[in-house]
Structures are given as structure tokens and as C-alpha cells.
Length: 279
Ligand code: SAM
Image (spheres, rainbow, N blue to C red):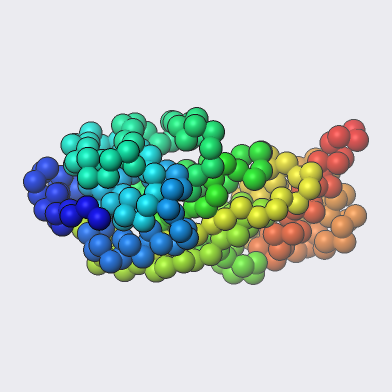
């Protein structure tokens, strides 16, 4: 196994002072990083997409786990440190300088299956998560997502109906995927420490309920949770056919969005899809 200097030293030698604008909070504890890299399962020979490698802490843990890593980094100051890491693991690391929100990940990964592992920059984390989960094609090209979020966002992703955290993110994450809170990470694990606690969410694709369009589900959850304190008969008024569909499915229109299970939203979306195709 490659003998590498501690990450703290890499940061110092390359002058990588954390940039607030780029959402930089680095992880330096190699034991913690190895535990994160183990969450997707055995990565020997597997392709992994990492967003925001920074000085390369998680990257080196993924490489040590035997993965072939493609890493997208926006901060060009980090590139020399990542190039050094690539030399220590010949043929295993490809670094792409760019904005992960603007790149087509499937093309980058040559159309082959891949895992995603990332200590995401908080400001782009949710946007990327939505992008990975809202494609019409299912199963997606990714086999698993292992992602660091602010604790509050992680709670929203895995939330159960009836809780305050339950909303669009929970439905999006759970209607055709399994999402679990895999690890809580204390703010003191980061340099510099962020203001809030973090947690890692692990997501794997599940079977897709037949004939439901992701777009219809998004439209429904946007309307329903956009006015989450209102009754469904009010919040879904603007979605054509929705009130009839509630009646057909036997869902009381005086209920509020947060009381509906993920399967209820899927059934509603399916009914509306069918109406649209019939009409
Ligand atoms: N993975 C490293 C770690 O765990 O120590 C760094 C994590 S730091 C929270 C987030 C990293 O994402 C930074 O290196 C930052 O430069 C990079 N980044 C921020 N926005 C990005 C974007 N849109 N695309 C790619 N990388 C981005």
C-alpha cells in the first residue's frame, strides 16, 4: 500500500487554506475516512465518482479500498496535491477540473455503472442529490450514493411520514430507492469545523413502481409540500385532476401532505399520469 504523508501535511505543503466560498471543510482523520470509504461495500475494481476531493482525504481512502476514482474538483489549487496522489496509485485516479453541477456524470463515467462517494460542498449538495435521484431512466447508472450532508438535510432525506422533516426530499429519495442514515459525523471532525453537525446518507436504487413519471411526482410534491400546513384540497387545487384522484383513491382531502406515505404520492402520481394519457 502506498505510504502517504498525513493530509494535514499535504494541505500545508500546497497552501490549501480552506475557502468558505467553495464550501471547504476538510476531513483529516484517516480512520474515519476509511470507515466512510467502506460504506458502499467492497470497492475492489469498482468505479467511483467523487465530487470535491479537495486535498484528497476521502480520495486516498477510496483508492486504498481498490476503487478506480474519477474526481471532479473546482478548486485548481488542489490539483497538484491530487496529481501526487494519482502517482501513488498508478492508473487508479482521474481528476477533472470543473463544476460537478455542470458536467454530465454518465458520460464522464463512460456509460458504465459507478458508485458516488462524496463529502459534498454544502451549497451544492442538495442540488446534486436531486439531480442524481430525479432522472426518468431507472435503475440509474449509479449503484450507490454515499454522501455527507448537514445533519438537518440528512434527516429530511430519510424522514418518515408524520414527522416535521418529512417532505419533498424524503419522497424523492424513497419512492424508488432505499435511503439510510449511515453515520453521524461530529462537526469537530472537520477542519475548519462547520457551524452544524453532519451525517452520511447511503442510498441504493430499488425497483421502480411501474409507470410513474418522476416529473409528475415532483409536480405533486411541490404543490403538496409548498403549502404543507394546508389541507390537500387547498394545496393540490392547482394540479389538474388531483382532487378527483384523491377521491378515487379514497384519500381524505382534508388531510395534510405530511400525513401521506410515499406510496400514497406514487399512487396519486400514477392516477394523474393515467388521466393525462387517457385525456
Ligand atoms: N473531500 C474533501 C474532504 O473530505 O476533506 C473536501 C470536502 S469540502 C467539504 C468540498 C470540496 O468540494 C472542496 O474541495 C471544494 O473546492 C469542492 N467543490 C465545491 N463546489 C464544487 C463543485 N460545484 N464542483 C466540484 N467541486 C466543488
